[in-house]
Image (cartoon, rainbow, N blue to C red; front, top):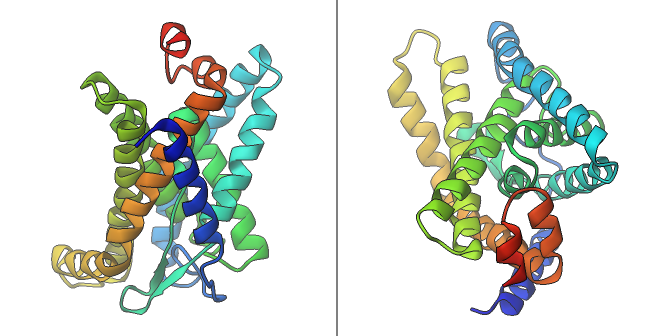
Length: 251
């Protein structure tokens, strides 16, 4: 697949996702699902990542005034992509694309966590997707886990010699799937009571497979296509954010 075809394919996937029916179900982990103690715990776990993202954003923006608008654009993209829930009744939540693979690649995991946090907060406030009490848990699963998984997978794939699109594909897949593994763990640990953790975790994770397996692959193509399209149209952006080196852009 050529770079031009990859870019067109990613755009086609994106608009196909936009046209998917999205009923008004709460996405991520819904309000009232987790006990208060677990909500507080996940907020505490997410807080250092958000603080680091804020410091990182301030530092980078001081060096490049165009960075904040670009980060804002990616925040809007994550908001739209992750606002298309597919109900998973057996898991008590919904399945959806995430978008944190591409933000982790372009912005780095720290600022990507911040971008995802803004998108999740706005969805909880204005769309009733997710919840305010479960915001910390949702940030940990989609923001922290998805961003770090996408970033590390992309970097490792590139070091192993994969091209931009294949590396982006792998990053998108792992960012998506890792998000739902952590979501499954959060749900299982919060609602298990005195029951063993692993059997419930496995049951919830398996409940996501019918929807999240193909969605993760779809998001992989979307992420890889976006990276390939940027490399074709605006390689300077990839150079600026350290995704590729100047000599690669010149080639």
